[in-house]
Amino acid sequence: MITSREPLTDAQQHIYSAIAAIPPGRVASYGAIAARAGLPGRARLVGRLLGEVPDDVELPWFRVLRASGHIAMPPGSRGFREQVRRLKAEGVEVVNGRVPLSRFGLDANIDRALWGMPGG
DNA sequence: TACTTGACCGTAT
DNA sequence: CATACGGCCAAGT
Image 1 (spheres, rainbow, N blue to C red):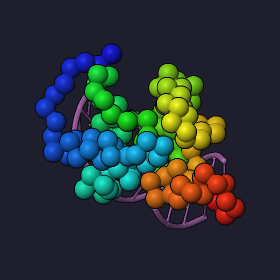
Image 2 (image 1 turned 120 degrees about the vertical axis):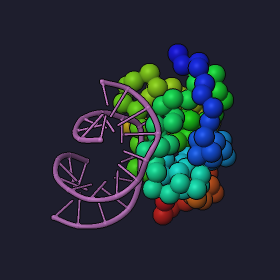
Image 3 (image 1 turned 90 degrees about the vertical axis):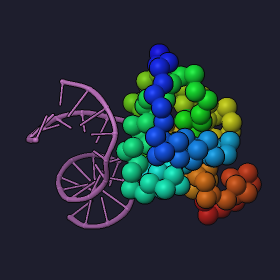
Image 4 (image 1 turned 180 degrees about the vertical axis):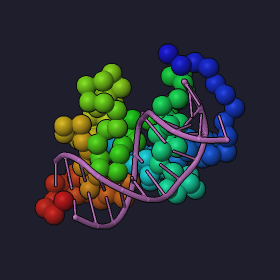
């Protein structure tokens, strides 16, 4: 369990803020988070940082997925199961470790998800 | 210093 | 759907 903390760089603080800003019931990709943090093209930095977030730091890390909608961690791993559990807990649909970004992505139209309208 | 890794991404085939 | 490729770059060897 990670408990130690190093001073956060500006980039890290921006990334944390971008992740914290994802509304419950929504998800965002690593790339999208990087862009929103003012670091376009640096998705890997987001992933690397999330892998080092201390367990005692409150952050909706589970709302961050790959651009494909897939959960980034190895299927079946502890983190994977935890992520699925938390996402479902707030109403996000997860099928085979994947979330339909067309309905739950930051820019998705929630009404379509609630009403199940065709075209999505 | 040089090389490898990795919770990634977009495009091409 | 899968594989390949170049881009990204902080950390670890």
